[in-house]
Length: 131
Image (cartoon, rainbow, N blue to C red; front, side):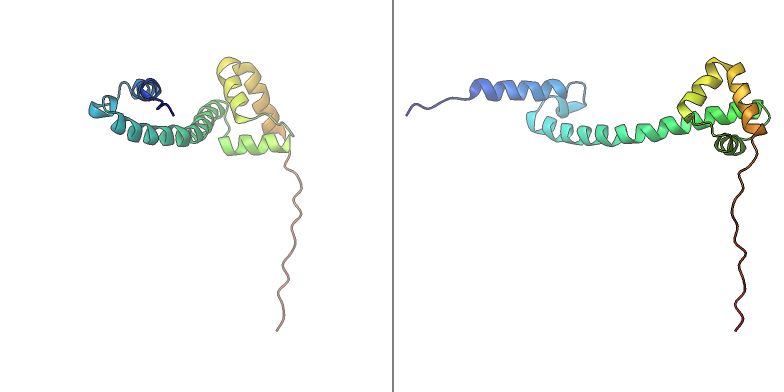
């Protein structure tokens, strides 16, 4: 049985790992073992941060909406409540974009939210139990 040497393949694998670790500090970009450890960590961070990004963007949209709403004379929470009462189902991303690019359209939406009457909420009177 002939022995198969894997030099080409191992060299290729190591080159690929070192190329991906390029730009990292010190031995992390030069030594194979250190590069692998470093890449495992960096991949975990990139995975978690892809999830965190969604929260960051939502927070950004809310801040922008709050600023635009206050310019129109309403608070963010009352604006969102007014949208729900008026059955306007635009998400925060679209509303934020409207507030920046088309302020006149956004102001019309704000006026609709202000004019929306609150829905009747069924409230039950709590009866005190007599002991």
